[in-house]
Length: 133
Image (cartoon, rainbow, N blue to C red):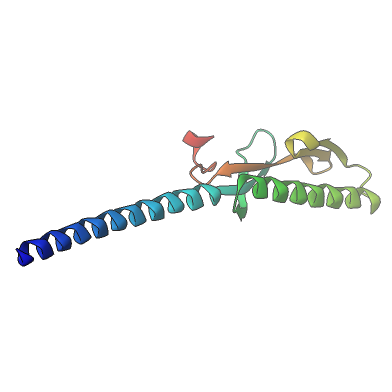
């Protein structure tokens, strides 16, 4: 009888160990899914001349959508400040239209029309692929 009592104890401990392992594995999977969702945003800049396919430039890989939007606002502010500087340095032919809500701007001048816009997209979307625009 001693052997059967030890056997039951060993079986019970083994079952508890399996449950603990399964619970630990599920916890790791849940944590990995959360981390993946948080690190899944990319800041893109779309630019070019109207009537031609846009150029897409990967600007920043963000840890969250909020982080991506903060970087987009910062980069938009830098780009528009640079454009204002062109006008201040004598490019009086340059007309600039700002769309702060959409983080977009357009220019017209001796170089023709030009547009630029910042986009925060999930990492699963690649705007360079026509099927994903």
